[in-house]
Length: 425
Image 1 (cartoon, rainbow, N blue to C red):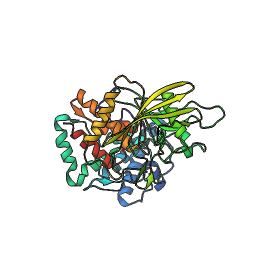
Image 2 (image 1 turned 90 degrees about the horizontal axis):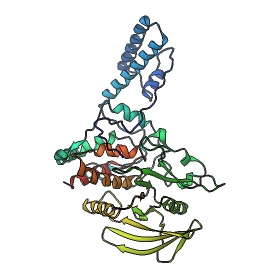
Image 3 (image 1 turned 30 degrees about the vertical axis):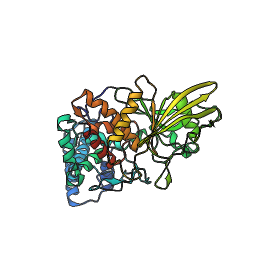
Image 4 (image 1 turned 120 degrees about the horizontal axis):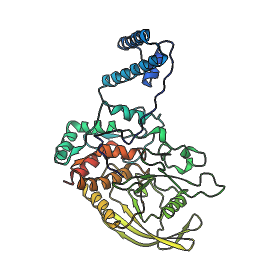
């Protein structure tokens, strides 16, 4: 994967939304609502703005001799109005209408629930939003020399700067959300109904992981999993949700079909009084059969302070392969790890063990977006800083979210990424 500086083009990985022109007979609150995408109370200031637009269009129409020119002017007036509205809102975007994850945190303590609490709130068009925001607010990459000072500034005023940076990031691209996830036979396969893979990606045209279909079984090719690019390698990772009881077979089919040799698990099966991931490996050394013909045998389990390593043998149709599961167990049930050293060491340990492995790494937590996004971002950053003199966490997370929605899910995880990177220098 080519590494690009998002200071050159913050929208280089996201496709701009297509605009459409419609004829209007008169200006009304409905017309204004069409321009802004929301209902607007007509107040004097807005009325003046509307009249200005009408006068501008009328004046140009008097001189224009073709319908095309009038349409162009209307579109220009539309764009001017949108920019003026954004400027009046103070230059920062609050995703209150599109928030699907309840990030309950106190900024002064940086404490939050690290897993999803989903809401049935309406989605918005982040693709067009992100492209528009490029002209208004861009977070530049930070040089390595200035990064420590930058993090200190972000932490001042109750971490206000962290909040501003995080609010600028689009959580997902609605236009790319997979319709396959919403098919009747696939809905039960999604741990959270609002977290689903993209059908396509700006970076990769085959972003959703597709299983080999079984003839006559609808949805047999579906699993809630997305290919995610690594630092230099497209599709280096598969980000997925923790298996459900009914998707364990699909999970192992994916491992088998992609020939994955490394599994990274960033949750425990039971946290905060709830099941976060169904145990998909044998408890003891007795073989377990899943999906009718896949046999899983645990060969070894090594428990350390911060993680557990398990070696598993997978057999199918007379063939076998070895898979290593690396389970990070020091992520607390609430918030984020107090120290970044263990997770950084964990990431580096796994990368070092994969020097000659070119198969995708399957990474999962519960939803496959929060801790999973932090892990992939950190793996990317630990390599990036060795080759470049700048750090671009904002651009990286935006890129990850173009491949799987909500990656690095909340403000605390965002700030943790910054602090992890800080501890590297």
